[in-house]
Amino acid sequence: MSRIQSILEQNSFSQSDFVQLLNANAMDQKLIFAKAAAIKKAEVGTQVYYRGLIEYSNRCAKDCYYCGVRRSNQTIKRYQVTDAEVLEAAQFAYDQQFASIVIQSGEQSGKVFARKIEKLLKSVKSIGQGALGITLSCGEQSKETYERWFEAGAHRYLLRIETSNPDLYSKIHPKNDQHNFLKRITALHDLKEVGYQVGTGVMIGLPFQTMDDLAKDLLFFKELDIDMAGMGPYIEHHETPLYNYRDTLLPLQDRFNLSLKMVALLRILMKDINIAATTAMQAIDPEGREKALMVGANVIMPNLTPLKYRDDYLLYEDKPCIDEEADACKNCLEARIHRTGNSIGYNQWGDSKHFAKRKSN
Ligand code: SAH
Ligand code: SF4
Image (cartoon, rainbow, N blue to C red; front, side):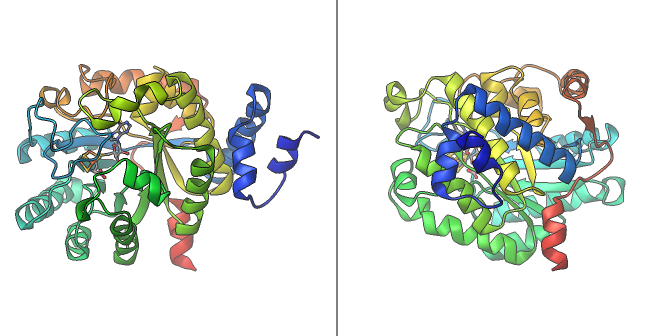
């Protein structure tokens, strides 16, 4: 039995195990993928759940060194989707039987933003008498704001830790109170206490990032006992400070491959959580999301942002689907997903099984 095979037989994994798995060669990688696919099938099944994504606003108070919509990027037009447009997109999701939406945004704080989102949540909830499940991804907020949004109808929240290594975190963010690793951890705990299904994730292939960092990220997810994950390759953006380090990065294809391995390893480690096949995977490989679905992912987020705003929500370069109508995407997506051996959980929220178990314990 090969070393990789024998690690895969284990029930628990150390950091060094994960480093070896992440370094596995092309042949051994197939074993990892096969194991992850089998676990997915047995534990969460082969239904893929849709979350219609609304990129609500690119206004952002933060200045993350990797992100194209960071405050200091003055080359982009700032926008905020109108309430009517959000409701139209949500209605579309409902009509298409997507069952859930995600509202994602640059980070804005303050009462006005908190109230605005609260009001929107209530309006979205009035569609089909609460038929739509709502995930939020609007950054770090006070616990009180998280509570208000939860009361208003959001029940899942995505807040990526970006990297679980505090030193690396401080290299990819400005060093100030607004970009504080411990605050981000506190926010994740607050979300859990409020009662959300909590998702987090990291970028893969960041400058300065090592295999040990990625191995620790996996252990961090387990330790935090997350319900959902969204991970994807880091993709450089020329209007950001990290662009200066582009020559130090792994080739895009390697970052993609490493991201697939991270998805597979997370499925092996946390068998019953929801894992997203992220848009950044598709940015590198046109079939990136489908490949992720085949090695453990079970959630996909079709973009429902009104077309006129899509060009302005470029977190990274070469973002796909910025000129496709949402429904056009829907038809091609359905066929693509069927080709992966999965079906679509239309009209189902597809909540995290892990969350349900966590709550019943
Ligand atoms: N403002 C919120 C949500 C929007 S950003 C927040 O930061 O939590 C959503 C995610 O986009 C971030 O968590 C980050 O992981 C990802 N992202 C930003 N810039 C990126 C880049 N250059 N490459 C890949 N992913 C990126
Ligand atoms: Fe703003 Fe989120 Fe981008 Fe950071 S990652 S600059 S918080 S949108």
